[in-house]
Length: 601
Image 1 (cartoon, rainbow, N blue to C red):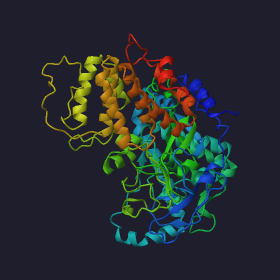
Image 2 (image 1 turned 90 degrees about the horizontal axis):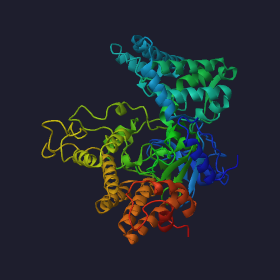
Image 3 (image 1 turned 90 degrees about the vertical axis):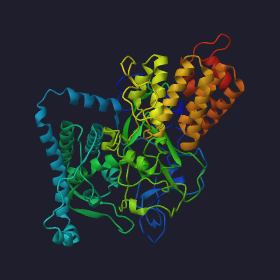
Image 4 (image 1 turned 180 degrees about the horizontal axis):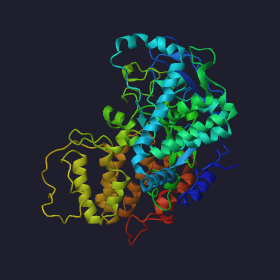
């Protein structure tokens, strides 16, 4: 199939009409040069306390061991700019090795809840799955001749206090499903592991054994299915050969994983590879139509990439990503100097304005996300390397963090995760407009710390003795993105009630929040500018409307390319949304507004 990018959008539109689409399998756009990563980027190995320097390379888009180390922040391998890069440059377009759709995960979780089997065995099943992983890790340690020597002194000192043998990391059904899907494709083509996935962190058995084994704590049955799927790899003859590990900058050649077959290596490492390297994939999530029947929410999922997995995380990323189906684009969001590390964010951009502690909690990883960990400097000496993992490898966003199961800490109900999620937003939008505005006002007071948490904000207002909205004392502010999301809902509600004069300043405040707190060229800023333009247009403030419209189109062209034609193609349904009441003298939606505000020429 030979399709250009606009054809891919058409294919994604067709797939999104299905309630439960299969994982997309769209081609790379016809005008994409697969040599682009090799031309623009190189892999370098950034090792803690290194005193040598050099650079690695990517050959024809594949990954290889770095040929040298550079002084830096101990992140391990990463992508660096070969030459100056302009904002809006496409650095990489990649399809994942495998993808799990969000509906598949939801369906598996629903099946688990409705399972009529003997639930009394679930704890035992979970323990069995954990024990299987722990035994494999322990066996690997015992087979390593160096392991005993390295730990003899520790054992002499700690004979009475042996370390726990069954520490594990629990996680989601989605991760387990992705592991199983990858195991299935590895069975069909073992080279996908030996020449691709095996190069991702943890890159060898030694790294893997120093991490807690991963188990599917959300659902023991799915966890056991994953274990059986991984054990089935031993039936593939090509996977019963001795395992090897790629050499690093200090190892000139491959070395054998002592006593382990490739199948055993996969069983030990693959769940960890998925945990640390998987990324969310969403098509046009910034659009207000995204969750609706004309949006692309059905195409959302989690996937494992190979080349893109070498992008490290930064709280100030210089690379943004967006997807069409399963085809994901990685684009420079600012001008980048040669030698600068190229980084993405492992979390939603709206989280990046939070303090170090909250960002770290959302990441759920094994390092502290400090603001000095900045991809805009090729050699940042201010990084606290004590907070970094001293492995020459990758760490990824942990979508399985236990913090996702509990948005509040035990200390005075301080949020550890964003509170105003999709469920809360939908509950608010289901309210009558007047009632919704009242609830939003109360929640905003809590989100901004002007008021202590209140159980009545989402009630119907009929309870006797309900707080009147005054007093209650000050509380701890929620995430800044919580207040941001509430203001967007507030502006939508006011616009829908025809109160455009009250809505426009709020839209403008939301645009300002994105400009000040999110990376440059963020797609949500484009969507918000479109709404500000439409609101100003409905008021008859054409000059203001055209100003927001021009900026929206300019930023869209930098990030997505294709000029005004592509903007109109992506935003045509957005402009058709029935958000604002009809005006007597001017249209407020549809093709006429598109032509007036967003002209092709």
